[in-house]
Image (tube, rainbow, N blue to C red):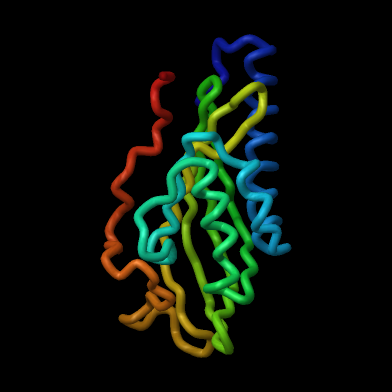
Length: 180
């Protein structure tokens, strides 16, 4: 989004919004790394959607703040170790809505097995009562391979909990929904 023609106030709001959204994203990953799974609900809008790709379990996308919060509490049942590190978080703001993406490098542990993980997060954000929250989170895994195995082998997707999940492009439009 270009700042040409925008007032100084609009430009400052855009920059402050980007910073607040980046802090929201950082908090999401801090909660994961510190196993604060019971705090995730506070990061999402009431009508939010989360799709963890093939790691999302048997169900489709998680819908609604309450369901999302409950699903995050189950992560330790699948992954006894989880550390995520995001890079290149990029945000585009349009008023009270925004979209963004970030690259992920992670290490997961399931039982005695360690995994090397890479993915891309695609997010939508909405400002509610002056606070930026996640409206949608989509994760597209590039690979989840056991440590010691090449990630460039033909088989690069392990930890599959949703076998019917395709590896093609995410079938969603991250453009913010019109106000209801």
